[in-house]
Amino acid sequence: MDAPVDVKGALQVGTDECKTDKAYSSKEVYVIGKVVTPGTYSEQNKNYTGMVLQSLEDPNVTLTVYRVLAGEGVDAPEANDIVKVHGYMQKYNSNLQMSYKDKSTPTIYANENGSSNVTSSGEHVTFNGLPTEAVANGTSVSFTVTVESGYILDNVSVNKTKLDPDSEGKYTFTVSGDMAVEALTHKEGEVAASEYTYTTIAQWGWTRVQGKQESTTADGVVLKQTNGSFVDEARIYKSSTFTISLSDAAKKIYKVEFTCTKPNAEKEGPGGFSLKKGEVGAYTYSGFKGTWAADEGAASVSLVASGAQVRITSITITVK
Image 1 (cartoon, rainbow, N blue to C red):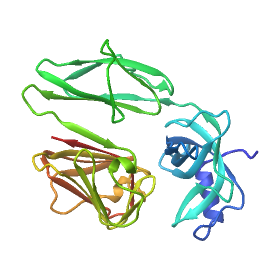
Image 2 (image 1 turned 180 degrees about the horizontal axis):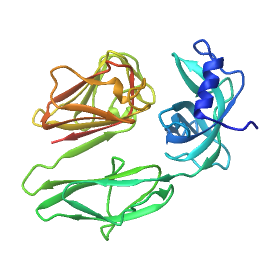
Image 3 (image 1 turned 30 degrees about the vertical axis):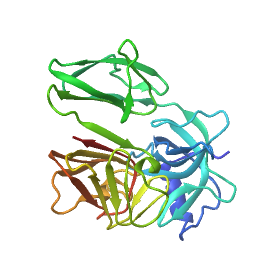
Image 4 (image 1 turned 135 degrees about the horizontal axis):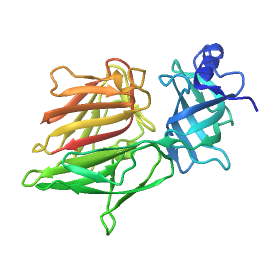
């Protein structure tokens, strides 16, 4: 077995050997990297699609592993784990990635469980019992929430997934990558905000198609794009417009947050979007996250993939 190279080394092999589109490296590459996202797991195929590895030498360098299996006896990958993977490098649509070739599928052959941070956010609340330092993936965390007098607790979530308290008012989750704990409140007598999170194409109300598409989710959120494709993530092609609106004209959108497959201004990253001319609010991005927000709210939000194609794996919409 070859000694693993860093993500940067694997990309260099791809640059040297994959000169034309759909070309493969001459042999499998063994690579070590930090998991940014394990990708989407398929119960049917027992693999992950769209795993992103970060270089241990340069955190700005990443490699997408198109499909990957967890080897026998190897723990399932979580964000921040350090993994070793072998597979073929490939150039596909001018991008370098690790991919399957013939009957050979990239495989994780070692996994060093990483440590992850737990952060919290929320106005008019105090979190009790959350760790203040990084903890190992797989750790169980229990906490409570104290709400300031005059406010009502609407929702507690971890990484945008709603948590319910037990009979003693405790919330519990298992650390699996960086965990963002959030509490939403509203002032007594005011209207509560609602958050809708979609992490699969089916939840978005879309099907696996290519081209223009519009769909209304069960929550009344209307998602529309002028040109793209939908496989395991939403792909908004360059120059296309992505619009979020509501079927209920009495409500407004106050925030849209989404996670992409690549960071910042890289192709597929949130930096490919810009706010359509004439739209209210502001659009910002950092790392794999893109955020639009407007204090006054808006009936709809339109973002243009002006810089490059954008690939979205999850989206959260805050509505009042």
